Each structure stands twice: as structure tokens, then as C-alpha cells.
Amino acid sequence: MTPGLRGLVLHLRSRAVPAALLVFLVAAALTWAGYRLDDPGAARMVGLVAAVLGVAAVARTLAGPDEELERGTPVRWRLVRALHVTLPGAVLLGLLAAVHLAVGRTAHAVPFATLVLAVPALTGLTGLAAVLLGAQAAWVPPVGWGLLMLAVGARPSLVEQAMTWMVQEPRTDTSTAVAVGLTVLGTAAYTLRGSRR
Image (cartoon, rainbow, N blue to C red; front, side, top):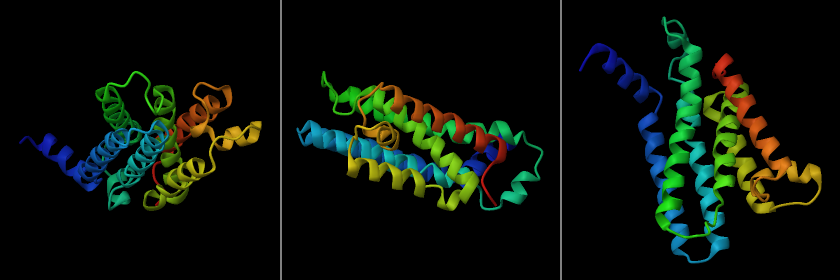
């Protein structure tokens, strides 16, 4: 193994990336199990819970055990942080989308538009939470808000639509605006600042 490759492997292990990948596989299996219930409403709920729990695993990858030591190394950290906050979300989204496709239903319980908005937005929220709270607590806002939205359900007023964006009908202006805003703001904040020490 070359020194560069060995350094990359050690970096990924220190950031708990293998553990996050394992959680992503569990989330994909949970999504598949939801479809086995043969109830579209339950499958949708399980699919969204799987997305929320999968995103929670991203939080631990957003900081290493010694942030000061990492920051002292000659690495383009903004690029590394951008990859750390975008690639895990993309992998999770790919796995969940693959499960939905593999099920072979013509009407998916979780619409693809919802999935495509939810995973990046919750990942962006995780990045923003890492900046504000630190990586150890970064899972709390996406999990808390995500599960609250699932418990409350879709709401009609504009403010309530914004607060329950993940469970609204896909492609509504409000849900799309909130999801895109969370994605962009969270990704930019984490890329520029990194996790709170």
C-alpha cells in the first residue's frame, strides 16, 4: 500500500467512514423491509425514517479525533470538508434510490423527488449543526426535526409547510425552497468553517 493510500485509509477510519457506510446499508435494508409490509403508507414512513437515520451517521464523519492536529497538516481542508459533507449524502441517496428501484413498484411509497430533496437537505442541516454544535451533537437537529415532521405530518399554512417540508407533496415551492436552502447553507457553512472545536 502506498503512503498516500495508507494515509487516506487512516483518515477515513479516523472519521468513522466505515461505520457510517454500515449504517447506510442498515438504512437501505430498513427501506427494503418497509416495502415488505405491503402498505404504501407504512412503507413511506419507514423509508423516510431510514433516510433520517442514515443521515445521522454522517455527523460522526464530520470531525476527526484531533481537529487541531488535522488543521495543522498541509491539506486543502475546504476541498476535504466539501467532500466530507457531500459524498456521504450522495452514497446514502444512491443506496436508498437503488432499493426503491429494486423493489420494482410502479408507484414508490417514497417519491423520488422527496428522497432527492430530503437526503441532501438533512445532510446540509447536519453540516450546519456541526459548525454550530460540533460533530458529536450534529446528528440531533436532523434526527429531531426529521422525526418531528414524520410525527406531525404535512400542514397547510405557509409557515407550517416550511416546518414540515420533508412530508409535503414533492415539488411544492415551499418544500423545495427549504430543502435547497438547507442543502446550500449547510454545505457552504461546513466547507468554510468545519466542525466546531
